[in-house]
Image (cartoon, rainbow, N blue to C red; front, top):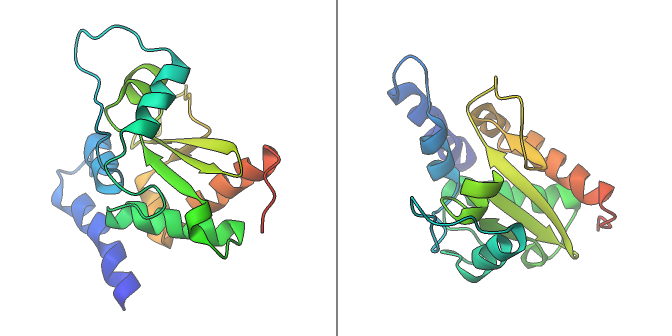
Length: 164
């Protein structure tokens, strides 16, 4: 019952929006907290490595225990998909509104065993070009994030990370 109620949160947000449903920004904010270092209009380009460093240094949550309900559920499902006994081995970092998001199209990332899998949360099914490793849509929350978690786990496997 508790899992059902938690997953109703995003569904309720979808229903309260206009006929088009949830906007991309609201979807991102339901899952991710804002990175503490944010890109501001007019700010110069920030290279990828520097953007990654800024994201790692400016997390609003413990990357092993995300503070948003949906972010925590996604972290949980990825840990389960990887077969982890110690979920603190898996880090989930938010890049929301950071230079990594603005310049490089990455809303968040998972790190495990020295590998990185980037994610982009979007409501735009018509978008043809993505920079992130895994694209996550609002309907991915309908199965308690299991499908998205398996796509993320597959990317780790492709990179050579060893599932537990």
